[in-house]
Length: 82
Figure (cartoon, rainbow, N blue to C red):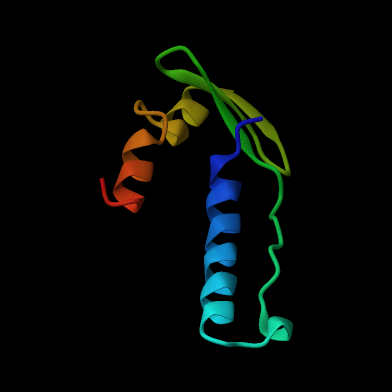
């Protein structure tokens, strides 16, 4: 499963902890990463996709709208300032 969004959340926790340690903070005040429920969206062509959520699995046009045409590339580029 491709789960880049989990890696982004984990990276944010790591950055917070590194900043804390670099500022001389205590190791006991570090934040731990708590992954959420598993979720995945896989494209099936140009318009359709299959989506796995904790409560159900969907296939077709609706998951395709969630994934969008640019496969989250646009959103990710915006988040990192590109």
